[in-house]
Length: 143
Image 1: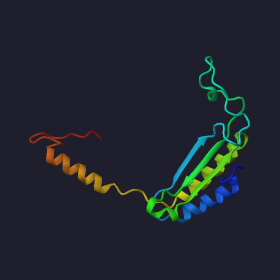
Image 2 (image 1 turned 180 degrees about the vertical axis):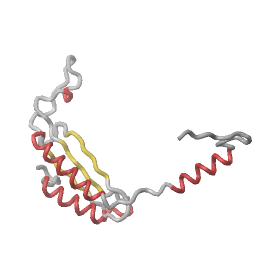
Image 3 (image 1 turned 60 degrees about the vertical axis):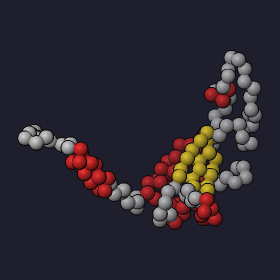
Image 4 (image 1 turned 90 degrees about the vertical axis):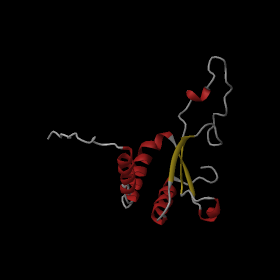
């Protein structure tokens, strides 16, 4: 592991704590393929005319970097939490099974977004524009 990245077990432990401590706001989850960083021994290859994008067909499978953040703004930087871990290609299946379990159990307590205000605004807008059934017509619904 490079400096700043957690082990996979520590990442899951901290991610569970992050979901538990967040009562308001957002949690951002992202994943990205690592390309020729300090953990990859391939180095940056030279591009050739026959292969202008050498990272499209690497000589070995590249690891993924998984990140999580609570998305605190600049004013609340001291409370911002940033987590990351590196997952090797041979451990991806087991990692994602556990990752899905952590996310499912942690997100089960979330409230659904209240969209009733948006629906009322749309209905009022349609009434104002004269939407819906025109005067003198009858709507027929088939059952």
